[in-house]
Image 1 (spheres, rainbow, N blue to C red):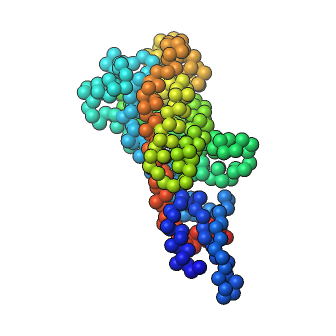
Image 2: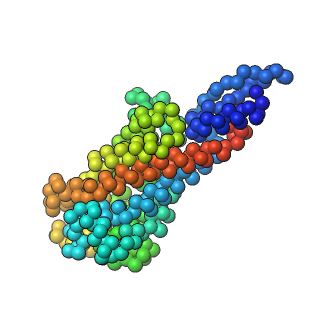
Image 3: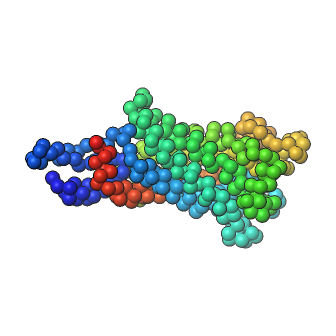
Length: 346
């Protein structure tokens, strides 16, 4: 088989990058051998493959977080334990219409520069670490693919949250009603000056604790639904949207209490702090303290404040994220050269 034959066969199917079956030839002196379908070794990668994961992940993160930022802003306000009288809402759609009417159409996108700046690298590390952990640990666990995907998701969560947590703090502080910050940069400067660098990671234990069960549910659910809806493992818009959205909605509902606690730690609502008999200059610290505060003020129902907005945010955002990621990965993988294809199987 000639090189032209290799290219024609490899580009006619359009498989995904890491699952592509590479056609190699066995040539013995002047004779032509029989073509062999050979799976790339899980530990064999090229710089191009890493770039694909990084670029696709960054694109998915920016698209997801920037486009869904208005819904995320509504979720933050609905989770407020003591909202401003002018920022009380009956539900998601009432909040959306009231914010547009009283604060303008673009109010929901306030803080988008910080979100884009953080979401790009955070999701680049997130998806890349997930892909590589799957390859490295493949076959190392009892329980098969669900356990592998859960462990890989846990590793991805650590890299994502370590990068994204400071951005979450800034984003949520500018999202609250009547925020005192003029911009994301003013917010970052003020928080650093008044509360120190630790303020940007005050909610990290809670955020990681929350996102860990979220991703342990999210990744195996997505992979299971994706394989069920798309057994041929091709790029299909509907399959990625449905699988990603369903996985995100399930994980969001299960981890709502921890998300409310994270929001409280990030926003540090002063009226809540004073009502809890803390000094005005004190801060709420730690997940246990946040969960105790929520329960003392609203009981069990307090843990599910904003859960509807959280599901409405996570369902399209995770679906969009997986769709953009799979699309970028698919399109970029088609540009791999013949030499790199053979290198992966050598």
